[in-house]
Image (cartoon, rainbow, N blue to C red; front, side, top):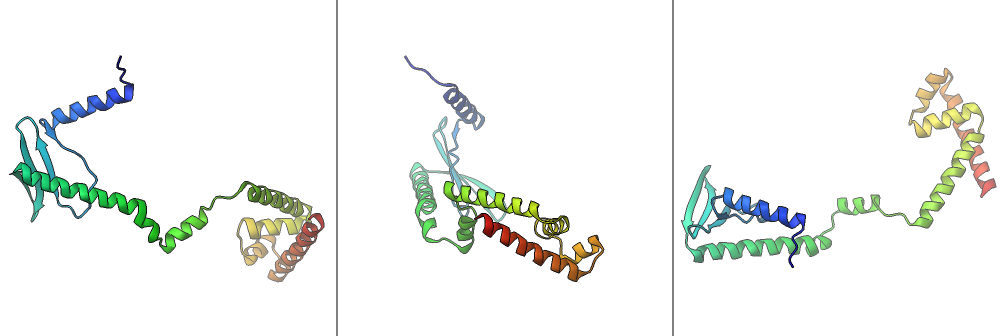
Length: 182
């Protein structure tokens, strides 16, 4: 007994519809090099082979022999084979600086490292919460909200030197707390 699943049925229906829409023309949509200017097709109803291309902004559509069709078809298959080879293998030899940076940025973190980072972040947040109110607010603005020291001084209506002193003292307190809890 033969069963056709829904996806197969859907694909068969669309293939027949596409075939009929193109007048019985076997249009194989292949991946090809962008420099390849032509499209070949076989019209099965009439057993005609055609090639289409653009020449000086004029679209040309010519009937060709089966032998010529086979030559162009082989050439397209070799192009496709070359592109697949490149995608699979050669890309690995020519890794650019951009690709290396992307691999570094999206580097997978091990479970141990993730646990360590999470526990260190928890300790850091606990340490920040133990700071005096002014130091805690200035640390949050400077490191988390990325405000400049001058912007913090303007918001707190104090001198730049007072903000610098407060941040330095807050960092010393954080360091003491983190060393003590380690």
